[in-house]
Length: 400
Image 1 (spheres, rainbow, N blue to C red):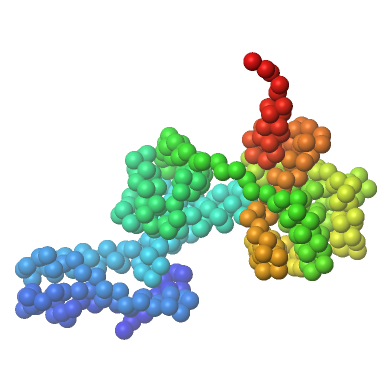
Image 2: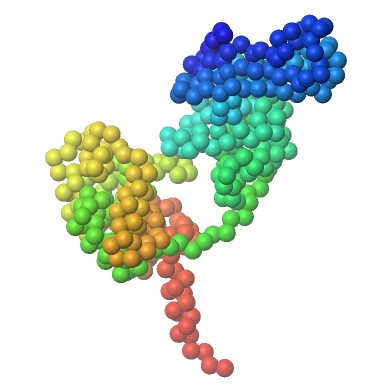
């Protein structure tokens, strides 16, 4: 059968109907009819696709007309909307310079909007992952042909509800994240006048119960430090630098040697949370030897943490840190010492913030973390704040 290639390299065979004489007045209607073709993807997978739906009609003419409508619809989804019958995902084909118009189908408009976002590459990557589920949800509720100019709040509500149906895990936090991504995409669509207002803004966030942050205990810290220093020194050094840095993992992994001034004990990062800005962050005396040891002899253009957590030409991915923490700390300590570590690696930032606050002040902790105010320290990072309040309250000796 003929191969019909699509712009992304996938292809499909001609759509056929059983019975073969379906266009003839002699075509039988006592048996079910079906449309079939085979779809091939570039990753080597293929699938025999069958389509039914015309058998509710009893006459040959009605069934033939219904079959033709179904064929036309399937071809439109394959060729215009980029439908993949294997993954059930729509990835419309478009030129990057495609003009966004109010008539453009919603899934395609979202894809084009994504290409025009100007934000952190990691955010775009995460948004793209979410967008796959969003487009699956759009298809799930048959809105894949909805012109973007007609999208209103009720459609966004239906799409988010459908996301909860097609995604295996769906929480209030996930809802809020997908809502944020849709706000970003529709902000672009409003900019290009595909619609007048952003319909996502009027949808309220869902309430998320903020759980207490688990942190490692003093005994766990002692064991972790000894274990990593003796067995996985490069990760031990990264842990020490990160713990005392007041930075985020993503910021540390984007750091280049040229951004470090050891004489002044400062390093420069671009904080991309909120409005992007460059900031100078402090290198504490206790961490200075690790910084000096790490970048000695490195090229100024090197990323500080490349393969092996040493300077190199390419930065490592954020998940490499979580993977090391899971394998070298959680799994190894459970096996060696039956010590169960619940806290994640990022909790070290909370722990350091708590200790800086206790020894200095909330203002100093906020400065170390490059926060504009103490609000984030009080609300999020100072995990020992309530304990200190409890201790003060317990000692109030106001007799009756």
